[in-house]
Length: 350
Image (cartoon, rainbow, N blue to C red; front, side):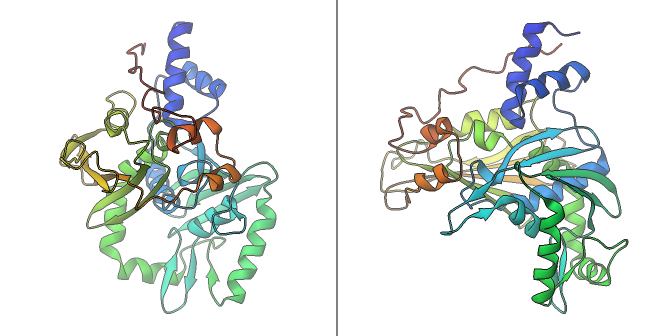
């Protein structure tokens, strides 16, 4: 059994990646040899699709992407959601937003939205259990206290039907709409399956965008074979992308990634200009280059001409004051969070 001090330090490090409660991190480290368990193949495929659809970001949640923390297990994962965002002038509940992003529905004659083949297996209180109709696996989407999935889903289903779209998440098998969509988008569907290792790895480390990144807003999408994340920081705060990259690709805690190439403006002649948007692009691939998939990270530092000071929106969304101090100017966090996690990961894994 690992020494008490070692477990405590490892639990602290693990929480940088997962965001989970300290006690849960300790219990998992004591019961498993894996620091952050890797998903089985079937589970990884499901998790990757969940990350792809939840990862759109931009809606001013308390945590980037609206994910408060994750509880990773080998054959399942629990994704704890944020509460609500007021960025649109009215409360947008993350549980409803997540359901709209994830649960499949068909627009006849046009396309299927959401995750193809995703099915609801249970809606108990604040937990929504999802699986893949073909490969299995389990993702539990956990809402904040007071969430009632058994009330949310019927309302959403009725709303879709009034809008002449067809909800698919309760069907026993593949719908013809999904089969037609898979057939017409075969290349994209097949590529998504091949990069499931990346999406699952990112979901299981979703807290990094909150605990380490100095970006006040994060968004993602896929294009031209890349999974792209755009992280925007304020000029007064700056960004510490080296720290983020080191952790994301850490040999013990991170994903099996290496930098393929990069373009960084941190040392450019205009890097200290508050009127220029500084951009640093990093392209990461699997250390085993025979495995497909590339992650593109765009770290952007925005000068006053680009800034939208929206700190109040994050306060209304319930963001932690310490996080607001790190990522928003004039909030009391003088170093922009660069020293908040300055100590390197201790190699105390036993």
